[in-house]
Image (cartoon, rainbow, N blue to C red; front, side, top):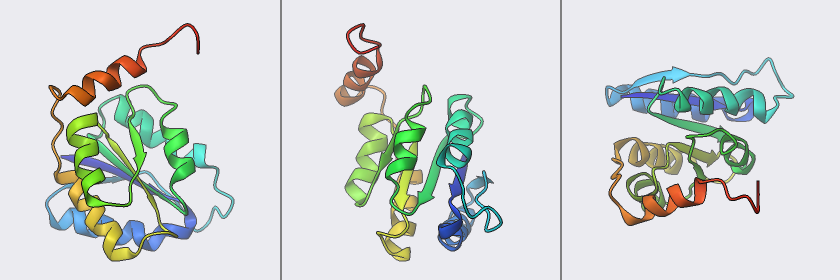
Length: 150
């Protein structure tokens, strides 16, 4: 499995710790950046390349770590085929993948601790998507453009 990971400059340490954990599980990790040299990082610049890689199947899953995780989730969901969610608990990390096809985990590095973030990332990458689940069919219906909104 190939997993992409990205962080803003404030969360480089957490990104490194999660990356090391995934590598210890024999998971290939592609680092999409996040540098201390770019203090005013635009969320689009760090999250969109990862979301596009997911859409192109260059990576199977992705993890984005920012201070709150909210903006990363909003930005990533602008890319077709990306299902990003901000997650703070293991049940959501697992069921988000299994039932809803979540393929991008967004973490708020300023909100959750290191141990919890590593636990959520591990749960997320181990979870398997079940395309037959009812919730996923509802997700597809939601993603189908509705002329009222688009």
